[in-house]
Length: 147
Image (cartoon, rainbow, N blue to C red; front, side, top):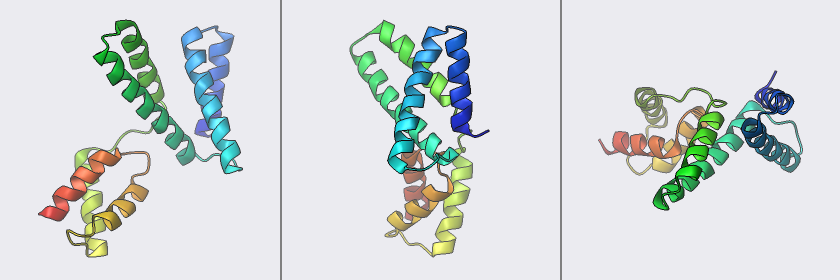
């Protein structure tokens, strides 16, 4: 069973058990995934599903920051729950050390210099797809290429 089917099954469970919060969040996620499936005009692979979840997470985190600025405790609490739920569907994230190892390997393979940040980033992001934050990868790539 793929990740998309797993999410749909959990959504149906939530609907049957009348868990309003869970069914609302998973319903929106299933809707986004179906929309993505229509756009791609093919079945979604786990990497596609992870990409959609990460996009949703990014939006939720941005909204959370705004809610904190506005001191909206009611919205902060529910958004934090949503982030936790969506995060549970993602694979374990790589540690900084694991990312550094991958970056070092790519730098050696490409014989990269400090001006090859783009090439290194492209290759590293393909290898860590869905398991590392792009900003964190960029930070590590810059650090390794600089010295």
